Image (cartoon, rainbow, N blue to C red; front, side, top):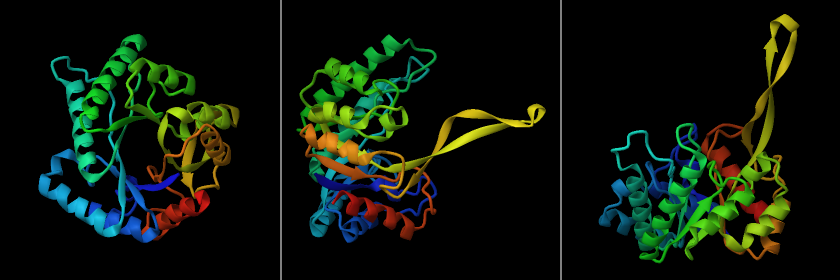
Length: 291
């Protein structure tokens, strides 16, 4: 497996110390990573800022640092906007196509995307079909840049392992693969080894972080007691110290034939705070654990 660090970990979006893109690349190399995943949004590499000159600068820095740009991270939700006259899906598809083009110029052959959140105003079947068609077009446009689309199993549509495989079959594009993670199936109670082994043949990359569950209760004064509140809160902790059985997950991926990109991310508040020293501890703990 190729070890990779996601730039969003140092983007400052959850109270962490913020590094600009160039500084992040130098930092990832210093930590010992050989590959990076770049967030396709500010403060890192938004298509709005990716001029030919800027792409050339990033490409030269990657070469200097002997770093590979392995994945571009797109942030998508194909549920569509509430105003019918706004071409929301076209914007999303154009955004993904832009990241495929940028990614190829930097050496990345994968754009990670999400499906859609369910909507109270859109029937499930309609939303499923809309999302399938949008991702098909993303795949067709990405193919012109020799790029693979990897669906990450976080958004509501196709979030369960069985549903995700069904969704992938509906998309039915040779350059559509999965960015299959343990976080979501672990939270929802799926058996990680079995799920990972089943989806390993379709998985191009996986993005990992570990968490603890924090049970919640709401006080009921009239009863002088507490009522359980669901779901539990979740908080990031150093890799290998949380509730997710990553040994089972990675064994399932390996036994299913996966030998792709294994990325670490810090995309939530982390235990210990957002100082760079703590973030570095998390990033190197993952590196050592997986090695």
